[in-house]
Amino acid sequence: MEDRLKNLKKAMDRQAFSQLKFTEKHRRNILGKINQPPETDEDILVAVMQLLVHEKTGFELTKLLRGRGIKKFEDNEGFLYTLLHRLEQSGCIQSCWTEAKAKYYQLTDKGRKVLRKADKKQIKSQVAWKELFER
Image 1 (cartoon, helix red, strand yellow):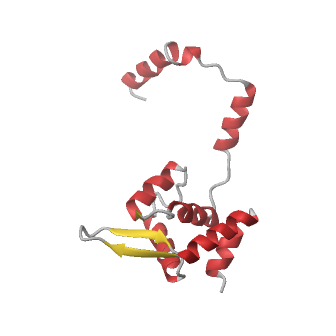
Image 2 (tube, rainbow, N blue to C red):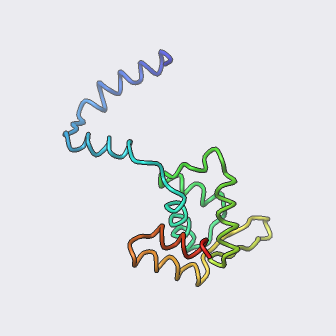
């Protein structure tokens, strides 16, 4: 680590972090989140569908998914666009191009129905995945 970063860390430890107190419960919670298994394709599918209740571009969707901690497509952005294409082919989302040459995606009525069904059954990923891709 560079010296300036080491000095910054030391200053932060002395100033900002000196007042923070972590309980054992906090530590376990943080470790649990760090050690969580990676997200599955099904988890990502449900997250995408939830975010597309209102229209978004692929770029906006990427930022929002990243904000949710989904990193599967970080090095493979084609994964997200492949998923969007499959959702569009299944009739769950629709897309349109604007005059500014931006492509927007949004859930269709069928997509909303699939998402509601997944939410009601509490096994979001399995229901949505089967509904969309196992026909």
